[in-house]
Length: 222
Ligand code: AP5
Image 1 (tube, rainbow, N blue to C red):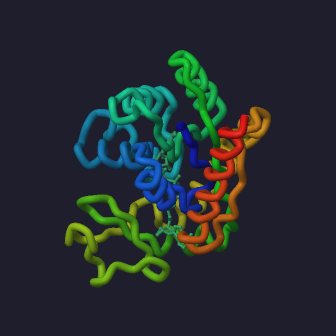
Image 2 (image 1 turned 45 degrees about the vertical axis):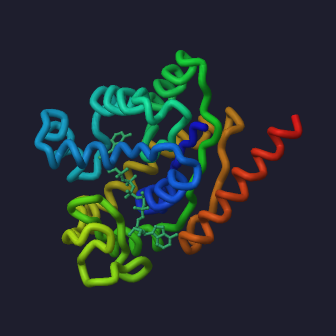
Image 3 (image 1 turned 90 degrees about the horizontal axis):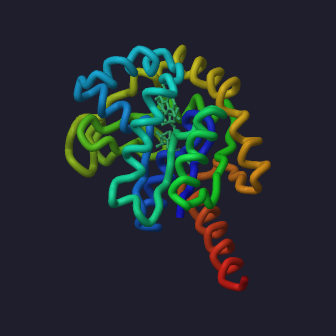
């Protein structure tokens, strides 16, 4: 199964991708996570990407596309994967289609996480991330058991540079201008499923589980 999780910053794509990855036993491939790892490692790609990421701009397609295609062809992604943060504009969507068709595979579903600006701002301003394992928390909605310490690995939590208010506003504008045309792209292909992601994470996950279950039973009746 190939799933695309699409939506504005802070809509909950990463949170649901992790739950879905455990549920479907396929990897969660996040362009944001891979880019942040490159920045942390100080690689050439990370150095080039950092300036764009800090401003909330898209990293140029040429840097992101090769990086994601290389990840998609690793053995753990043989049975499918969940893409979070890619594609983010029309040229990425077209490049992805071509790459997947060349492998005689297909995208099953694009899940669109719809949410309001107020919720986005609250979620991003309260997000804290583990410096070591990358697990996401929220100061109010999903706090760690110990203040600013990761429940899983005990490392310190931090606020992402691009979660500061001015950058969040730019990320939203970039999303509206460059990413929303991707919605129509998948709608025309009959692959878009909209999810109201204003609800609690467990509720959103249940909705996705039901959508996947309904698709599976429709598929088995054909
Ligand atoms: P990326 O890391 O992909 O950021 P994003 O798309 O802006 O998404 P976020 O990670 O901010 O939000 P999310 O929807 O995953 O929400 P989350 O689950 O964490 O990209 C970062 C940058 O990398 C980009 O700006 C760009 O520069 C670059 N980049 C990445 N991909 C690129 C590409 N393809 N091309 C070019 N450049 C690219 O949740 C947010 C918070 O809310 C968390 O605190 C969470 O705990 C909480 N939360 C989640 N769900 C709920 C819920 N249902 N109820 C209550 N709280 C919730």
